[in-house]
Every structure is written in C-alpha cells, then in structure tokens.
Length: 631
Image: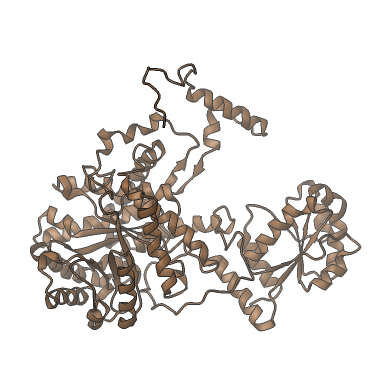
C-alpha cells in the first residue's frame, strides 16, 4: 500500500463548500421538473419519511444535526449519560451475551435443547418456567449438565417467579455453586405479568415478594439480578418506540420506589434491574431506542441520587415477535438478522434471536441453530463487537436518539401523572394509547404502505406450509398480542379452508389486454395483490379482447376478474371486455389502475371497483372472498 506524504494538500481544496440552501435549490429544481410544485425550502420535508411518535427521517443530515451528539451531551462509552454504552469497552472484549430462549415444557427435551445450544455458541439460557414452560419441580432436570457458574440462567416464570427463583437458588446450593458465582436473572416481573394477563390485584403482593428476592441477591448473590423491567408486553400490544420506552421507564421507577421502600439503597436497587426491549428490522430506530433508553434511565438514576456506573442500564434485546410471519417464515431469518445487528450496534449487553419458526410453535433444532449462528456470524465473521459504539457520531443516529428520547420522556411523564405504571395499566390508559397506535399502523399494513415480504408482497400460494409442534399457550387476558401479518393471515386461512373443502383455491381471472409490454406491470401488481389474500390468479391466455374474454373467463374457473393493461388500451378495449366478462358470469370485475375521466364509462360497462397502489388491500380481498362465498 502506497502512503501519500502529508504535504497539506487536500483533494477537495479546489472545490467550494456547498451550502444547505444550495442543496435545497437543486432538489427543488428536480422536484419541479417531476411535476411537483414545491418551493425550495419545502423540498426537504417532501422527501422526509414519517415515523411513529411524530418523528421523521429526513433526506439529509448535516453537522448541525450532530450538535446533540457531541461528547458534552452524549458522554463517552461507559460514562454518564451512557448513550454510547454502559461499558467503556462495549462488546469488544467478549461480544454480547448470546441468549437463547427455551419454551419447551418437557424438561428432558428442554435439557437436550439447552445443552445443544450451550455447546454451539450460546452463552446464557432464557428458560420459560411454570404454567407456560418447564414445571418448577423439574427445573433441575431441565438444567442437568449445565455449568451454572459459567452459563447465566434467566427465568421467565410469570406468576410463579418466586417459587421458580427459590428452586434455582436451591439448585445452585445443591450443585456447589458459590453464592458469589451464581449468574443470571430471577425474572420477577409482576407488572409485566399484569400487563399480559390483566391480573392487577397480584401486583402489590408480587412486588413485595420480588423485593425480598432483590434483597437476598444484593446481600448474597452479586451476580444475580432479581427483577426484569420487560417492555415486550407493550411492544407486542402495538406500542410505538416512544411508548415502549415510556412504559419501561415508568416500570423502572415503580421498582425503584418498591425496592428502596423495602430497605435497599437506590444504587443497589438499580443494580437489581435488567431492562428488556424489542429489536425490530428497522435498524436505525432500534439503535436509537436502545441509546435513548440508556440516556433517559441515567437521568432518572441521577435524580434518585445514583451516580457513576450505577446509572448504567443493563439491556436485553429480543428480536420482535410482532414482525415474525407465519407464511413464508424463511424471510424471518432476514428480519432477525437485521434486528440482531441493530441490537448489537445499539449496545445491548444480551441479545436473543428468536428462531424463524417462532410464530408457528416450538422451534426445531435447525431453527435454533440458525438463531444462535446469527449472532455468531455478526460477532465472529463481521467483527461487529470489535467496534465500540459503531453508531456514535452519525448525525442521523444522534438526531434520532435525541428526538426519540424527548418523545419517550413525554410518554413517561403522562404515565407518572396518571399515578404510575400500575395505575395506568389498571385504568386502561396504556391499553387505550397502544390500541390507537396499532390502529394507525394497521391502516398502513392494510394499504401496503408498510409491506410485509412474503405476506402482503410477493406471496407464494403454492409454498408448502411449515408445520411445528404447538407451543404452550402464553399468558393472556390483558393487553393483546398483535402481529403485522394478522389481517392477511386471516384471509389466507379462509383460502386454505376453501382449498381443503373444494380441492381448489378461490381464483381471479387476469384479463390482460394487448402485448406484454402494455399489461405486464399491472398484471403483476394484480397477481401480487390477490395472492396476498389467498386468491389464485389465472393468467391464461396471456392476452384477451372483447371477443375472447368470455370464453377465457369461463375456462379459468374463476368467479371474479381483473382487467390489466395500459391507460391507452383501457380507453380502447376495457369497456367491451368488462361487458364480456359480466356476460360470462363474473361476480365482480376489477380494473387495475386509476380510471381518471373514464370512471363513469367503465362502471357503466360493468367494472365494479378499481385496485390501485395505496388502496385498502384488506377491504378488497375480504370483499372478494365474501362475494364468492369463502367462509
């Protein structure tokens, strides 16, 4: 490699610095050429992407946006306000904790899976215990052969957290693990359990029992944490990033109040908390969320008199169940890869990659292998952990972190004004706000402005379904559990039932007009749309006209039809083809595209509806299945 001498020459020296205003003028010129009547100073907002919580991603960020990301405001890795990470070394020494979840209720088979994971790269075990997992009495069997002084154990026992925790503590003692060598989290989370089940009456008693565990850990087990501040129930109920953070902060404050009231100093109380957040495939929002969470918690800890490293938030990131799909589940590998990358870059100390078949039931060995190897590849091949705070200094990330922190602080203040997290859950404030947020997102999913690959976009009707052993029923009765694919999944289930009953799926005939160059784009759009609802497109023959459309439709076995072509050919042939399709018995005739001034002509000829990009796909597809009698 040739090293150029340092002679003070800069390759950019002869080029003048471009101003922000110059960039705006150039962008405005391009937009006006594209037919957008927009002044230069509004060009930037037109190219911005709206996010939840009133935030937006702008097309350009400059050094001015990074002012909030200077060392004075963000600190350094391992120092308050911990925006850049809770440890000075980040993940550079040992990477993040690769934490695998296990939900299998059979303790013997659970033990086999646990050992296989630990032997192949997993560094801690997240074990479901109690009603939705391994029986408390069989905890020892599930952890047989596990070196408990090397592999941290994280319990998820819901209402059974106290007996599960004591069973694990007895196990440490029976196996000769010194109290100071025990590692993991006992998983006390009565607020999160109440959020999932609606059992608010058990919160006070649960927090009292958890406080006793926390005091025991603080006195005898420095490597154990008693409490989980779990934001997953709120994320899984449709919360925005700011709402998820607001709920976690309010829950954390509730725990500080309870633990200090039980006699723990504030710093010792902070040390008993582990925070759990969702990591999504929106990598920058995930990075910003984890950074904002640390900044906000450091501020709360400071107000409570906790300084230094005591204000660093311990974070466990879990790839989002909301984004996991049941159809074409292989795409979940890509979603979880991006999410785990974001979790690592965002500074989470522990990362759980849910297996790609998580939404289908209990994962098989292959799915668990892919899940754990996702972190292994990021750490060992991509060397992601060797960079401390890789997102630090990015003008976009720093700006987004600050804006998200401000939005989350408002959510936290609203919850505190309502009496705290327990009161906000009991009074329905949390459910109401999360429901409103999800309703807005549901609209984006229905109109495919938020596409779901393999479900609302590029579905494969002929792909065999992936079958898995059913998982234990999770806690229910409180906040709902939502999924991005739920509306489309309901449609596909109706199609599956029709296939099982009749031997064929509901069909739509694509009446393509003219040559391929004229109809391919809209025919592909229509096929994609109808398949998202389980309606099989029939595009045979490749092209029809008014004379051949009726016979082709009859031969297709379809009940509805969609005319596809260019606007020019629509003007010439669409009316005649629509009449022919109606005469052949088409129960519903669609036209792909906007009708413009020809709407009345097309409707009089028999076109019932127009399918366009940005239209309500769920409404269209539900109407088709209803029309042709698919239950």
